[in-house]
Length: 319
DNA sequence: AAACCAAGCAACCGCATCAGC
DNA sequence: GGCTGATGCGGTTGCTTGGTT
Image (cartoon, rainbow, N blue to C red):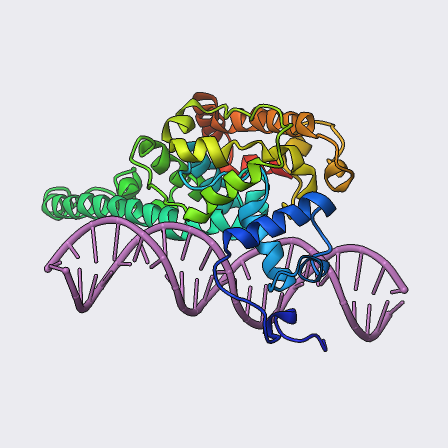
């Protein structure tokens, strides 16, 4: 509506492409001082030759405190698969349930890893099913001559059951993919490399974040085993979390699980002041963990899934 | 050692939605 | 209620990197 395409990004002199550590530092410094938001003002105020959208994206997807990158844990994989089956490609909504992950990261991970993984498993399953079906057909052809007098209804005595495509089974897609992923839980997770600039930025940033409390620990022991040490120390659990309040840009159409799980008020503190909100972040993490525990309480979950309509039973929890 | 290829991911782009006037 | 600017979101692109020939 009268708005120029891609905002101001087409203007001459606007830089595109990868961000440099210096640009990152400039952006983070600005946000540390003024808070996130008012992205229009960022390029003008900082002298960055980037458009506002680029600044916002860089912040939300890369520089924002508390972001964890790469090495998705099996548990996170399952959350993503579950939520994807429930919500579709609403990456921001999915990301809102994985506070340490960005929508972009989740989207990339889904497109490059999970989709492929699930596809392979599906194909394997179908191959097995077809093999079994072929065997059964042969068997039945042979038997037809012997049991010609039997009722046609005898076909429905369950002998076709296992030849039915997986998609027609009573279990939901979410159940299927969850089972597949559980089965592959200990399979090697892909290793992700990180741009060298991230390390640089991490080190640069440490300078003006001295008074931060100790980093939050991931409650999933398995996760920590997977993390590369460099990421652990410098990025994943970096004390940036102390200015989490500045982010306020997790951008979700859905309430976080924690909001559903408790009666705690929404975290409106996110965009106010410069105080330390580590406690709120911890609280949110705990609330989230309780839901995750429910979600990944394997035996109980399996039971519930079997007794209910599969993944759809999650809906009341999520909405 | 060089060329080629494929995978992964950061960033771009354009549309949708929200919020203020 | 309509307009406009700001921001959010999801699909896509293209660069980088690692593996293979």
